[in-house]
Length: 218
Ligand SMILES: [Zn+2]
Image (cartoon, rainbow, N blue to C red):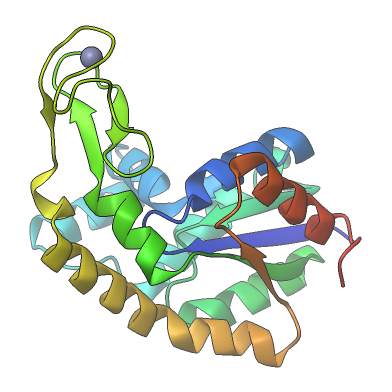
């Protein structure tokens, strides 16, 4: 059965990396709603104009517009055997839309959730430092530079993103958890939720992801 794979994971859980690798391995397109919205907003079409108008007014794109965006994108031939969704659905209403859409397309939806403890997420996010020169990423807990505060490659000072402090990370993680809980329940209740231990090294996480996708894990 052809699949629609919905990838979920808190900020810092490594969901993006796994989605990319999965897309490569399966030959499925990885569809990020954020990317598509940017792409569509740039186009001179009625939909593009509507998205621009909403964004200019500081409003979220409505579910109807999002549904059309997803429908348009997933109707392309590269989605015929399946696709990976990143950033959609975000609400129960959107999840129900996806049920209808995938039903029409004759595809099964599964939710792959990369789970990482709050403690680890805090370390991953608050410990992150980026080289101001070359963009190399370090982590003071997990991958410290040889000389504290400076890049190993070029000696340039490392910077911390202003919203990577403990307080705003905690707020982001809480908000994420609250907003995704109903979705997780939705897929759990229908037996289509697969939770992956995201604490393990990237390759091992990917092995678990593949086991789920190929049906080795029920
Ligand atoms: Zn550097």
